[in-house]
Length: 452
Image (cartoon, rainbow, N blue to C red; front, side, top):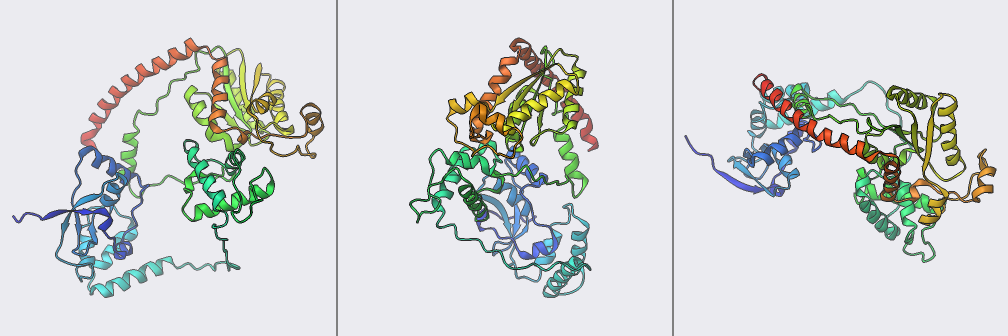
């Protein structure tokens, strides 16, 4: 038997033929199967050789190439066939070497087209026509008016550079909001436009609008990662689906008996929950709440009656003496009233023995942290007069506090109401339980193995 001639080829030198995408879907770095393949390669330290042409085009191994790229590998083993990508045999070999992979119905149909009689040039046209025919729809599309042209980012370079620096300083809190970046810029304001010496960034609407525009252009240019900035006020729903059963089974087995969390708060004398006023602080609250297993509610302003009812029901099921609610809201007329309104409703509408704590943002914190003003109180607020008589006309937003500091404030508040001995006992018990669960998981997977 003739031995295969293998050689290491730089990943950067490997090319993907457009003919591959005429038949198969592009490989996706977020595909669970690709991620799983990368883990397997890392564990075994072995990569099945890719099959390539003399001019470096991949015939078999697109997925392996991507998995190795994710692992940071520079080169992969390849078997080089004595043909080029222009060879009449290229498409046939492409389908032959991919027979065993899982495919969708459309991919199977296109493989059948390649198997049919005809030269490669004809097959190329047939595949392209097939894709065009299948993409046709019978419904008229709307006409798109005008064009969208964005201004050059060159003049706003000082602002963008500082914004990018802030974004990476807050990487552990991604996605962050435009508003959070706005307040961080106020610590050392850059120029909004390098040709305008008097255009220092300010805490006003014009500066904020410039910032949001610059951030958008920075994301479109690729200088700001898309995942770094989020807008939680506009939720998007995407379904978790699979092209076939194998990745679903693998994902289920990988997560089998790994989702156990002990209730750290079950031994506490009181039931504790967290309430946040706005979605922009959800990513800040979540890790702290998760660490202590404390439920949290994001009210998005004044909370509706349903979340309050659900909180009351959770409290009653615990059988505990008191409900402690840790509240985070802006320091403005409505933020102050949100904390009061929520507490009154829990006490008066649901007859709950509530102990509310305004964790942030308070007047003493505004002074202590020397926070930048968030503008003047809105006269349209029904709580305007009461607020300005007590605190003055300026208001302050939660985003003015750095995420790290806000987490520190929330953590300190939680610790202040905890029985530490009871909490530590629950943490230690969970460690013991997870050891036992790990043993059960191994036995179960071993039992399932031969049948999978």
